[in-house]
Image (cartoon, rainbow, N blue to C red; front, side, top):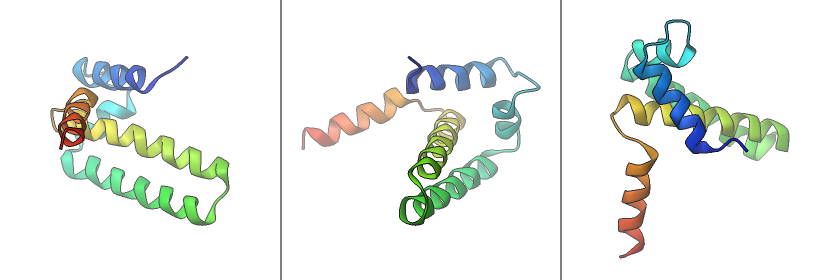
Length: 93
């Protein structure tokens, strides 16, 4: 079964290995502003489909959002482990 951790590993590999024909690597090469813009676009599309779209459309956009979010984390030098650590700190409050 494919997991979010598998997706994160693939994203990190494509960026770290500078895979030239990879959308992931080419997106990061455009800079943090472009990556963040894509996250924003996908977030808006996810919200729209949550309210007005089909379940299929919502899951499609939610998947795009998750992918672009993971790319943004990597571009900023973070990983899901960092997010998990932050959430764990909040749970203890």
